[in-house]
Length: 142
Image (cartoon, rainbow, N blue to C red; front, side):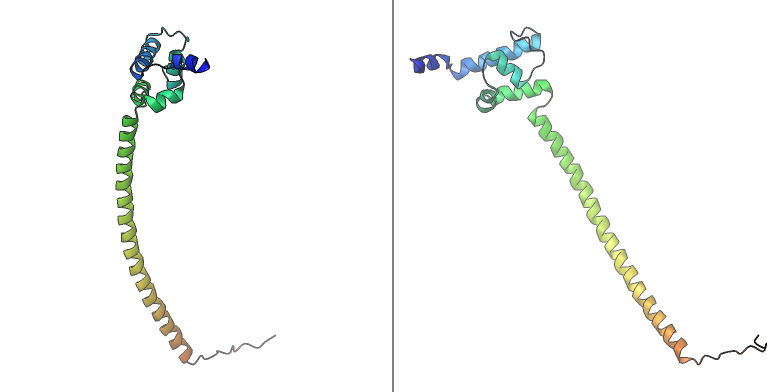
């Protein structure tokens, strides 16, 4: 007998979708039976007497319509993320170019540094080759 009772709760998909759309409409007009104020998937589910999972899993168009009402459309969010991705890729390309320029400058500076180090070694070697003469003071020591 319980199986028959459960079967009585099942509605055709078209009827359930109609119930969900009516629930959305009631929420938008402020006439919800559940006294909900905001339109959300949870509020629509409570108003229609179903679970949120049912809306997510079996009525994605209804879920998308609710998100659009909330201003959180997955398409809009995807488009925003896509634009953000394009902007980040452009920044990344600029950074890669800057890195290449800095590497070239670093190589040039390293080359100049090696030349200066070699010149320094040569000059130090020349200083060692000269004989150093120590000057003696003419004043007597105390």
